[in-house]
Image (cartoon, rainbow, N blue to C red; front, side, top):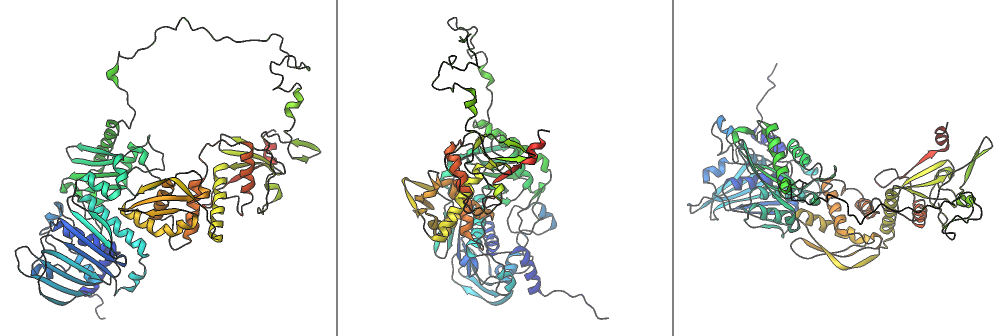
Length: 616
């Protein structure tokens, strides 16, 4: 029997490694930029075309490489950062495995121009699919200039599964944000299709956070600074008022390396537990300084997961640090015990104050038919039978006994059900009455029982179908605002806003881009009323980033759903009888009144039989 096991060629092994290290264009940028930081670069330029499919260029002013090092850098497991196994426990640099350049060269056309500081000439290397085509001297600037063309040209399956350009560009921006936040002393520039997206000069941590995440958030940053025996923690957290429904502004850095850590995320959420709702996320930018011997960064191919030697202890230190910062800035209510004895407490009741006087009419007779007992005869009916007049509703018969459902607040308008295809027994009866409970639900009789309508969801369904009608008829109405609203976005959100501007225009938004990722909202949809459009646009952008809006499906329909959810009435809004009548009438003109666009139930019915069981 012939031998079956053989060594893989280097080109194939590199492609397999690339599958782990290089997942998309953003992965290439991450590896190259981190290498530039390790080379002590103070300025890094990233130039991208077609979201990295066509071109990725990373230029740095770091130490550069000699002719021999430039050639060796593209070999597998070639690194300048590890010389023995013991070095794995004292890693303070970014790229240390020596797989990145070999993996990139295996799946793209690569050019490198590099020169060390004291050399007159640099080195120019051209590699295609792990094969070195040429290497020759060249005149170039100090540092390194990587040119990556035609990513995944020889792995068509990987190229096919790349997302749209807008999605891949957001991945690139996310990686640049993480790296720039971890290294504020380095200047970063990002250009896409000749359009500058990032221009970050060297700064301190707070300035860098404000530049990356938006100037408006600078006022909501609370500093964190704690020193412990095993770890030092510094950075910033957001105020509870700045918490959002979706994540996106949560960053952990360990020794200036970005990491994801769900366990430590819970430590921060625990500190905010009594300050924000359970479905909101505060922003935070936390930097850990810890001895390399107490962590392991080699547990994930992209080095975004880090294991601590004592995670429980780190959790406690972090949780205490967040609570302390919130308390210092008067975010958490506290009692000042230093004011003891200084508070004036009244010791006796003012002698001028007496008990309340109650007027009693001893001649009151509730059964007096002439109404003489009433102090306000014009406002109270003289006959008690009249109190129930007008409360009758549609009834049903069972075993010849007539049961009447009594509900107050009868509306004056007739309910229309021109579009509701449900059973006649499952919709409001003619000339129905409406009653609001807890400013949240609307009760009304139906032939089969009692209908309970969730008023906010009903309004959401009505608005959704109205927005969808605008899309189909292309008849949007814009109301110009008296005072234009200005929003400042970070780079990622600004790119998204440019992508959806045309879709928003269909609904009636008039959004104009000013400068430095600043947008002015000059007009809003007529149906949106007086609601602030800033939170709506933030929710739309968060929905894109979280994947709630999928660009491959009906984007306009998804936008309509989110807009309806944001434009619906506020929680606990009290409605008049006419408003309830109009709301229910418009609900049952909808094609699908029973559910919101996201599939939540709008109303439910308590059947007559179930009501009867309650009285047996």
